[in-house]
Length: 296
Image (cartoon, rainbow, N blue to C red; front, side, top):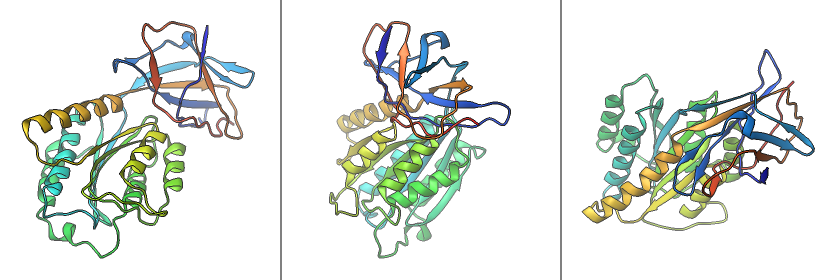
């Protein structure tokens, strides 16, 4: 048996009927294939205690696509149509097999469409945004990307195992919320953050993140990020954009939800997962190492 230290992010739920912890984990091979294991081949080890999951189920998570355009976005350049195109692409590609929310945020909430709204309505809303005076009437303050993420988490509340938040952003300001508060909430709710950043200006202060800071925030939540600096969709650039987005969508696609009955934890614990089977190629796990209180 091989003991492997996993980078796992946990959404821990308390059942009204029984003491249980629910743990969403995604294992991805080096070739990009999502790997699945039966309950008897997986064991959760916390200290000297070891538990096999009672059930494992693959889920196609809910996805919120957040188009965040703060006051730092140049709406008169190629950047603005590029970010609206990226948001539309995410809505279209992820609507097959997922419950998709669409949220637009421009220093304040502008549009919120839930999964019961058809894809065509979400795409039409994105198309209208460029010509909506209210949407483009920014204040003089910095854009609030972290505030926008916080708002999207409110929309997704109550959270579900494996939730994914895709943020398409053309701004560079944080807002009122801190990176630490946002990361803590992402980890507490088990929500993975994915960043699609199209930035013309790169800067940071002790109070704000640059684009690389946002990509790291996404990685720390169990997600990932990609940065685009060339907004001209030439044939060559379109291929590169499409390749990067497809890798991200594949990571979003599905997670395994492990349910452990009888587990009770009163505080955060480090974990290990023991595999009883074998893997023909190297793999990584796409969640941060967080295990909070769960069980009765």
